[in-house]
Length: 174
View 1 (tube, one colour):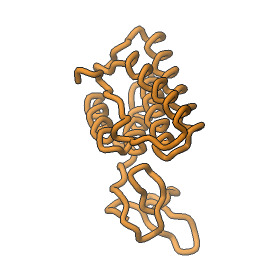
View 2 (tube, rainbow, N blue to C red):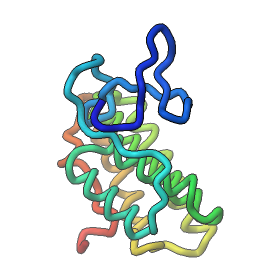
View 3 (cartoon, rainbow, N blue to C red):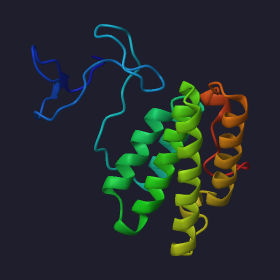
């Protein structure tokens, strides 16, 4: 179980050490459950509070490694633990990562829809907050990337390479 704090309950649901329901099956690099006992990738720990710079750096490393599902979990931690006025930002970034996950899994409709939803969310957050480059994130460029990838996914209809298709969170110069 990859060194996580998960337990397999016989005859019942998998639970973590605190008793919360949590699937203990190993997962592949795109977050898909594998059979019990299979070799999976290390899962992202949940509930980690990180500084925004740490969140962006860790998410970028996961995206670069072709693990957008895991990057989504990092953004989700920021969404849940960060300042209230930034929750829409982190939620939008999580949607972008999930959109890439679905696109890499070959889910054309879901991938394109989530990429566009995430693009709209980060643009809306930037407009409402007046902060187009929070934490040095290039939100306008991310929105363009997401919409372009959504178009590619719909046109080509097959899975994309997650690592090759990943965005630069801090822009092309980063």
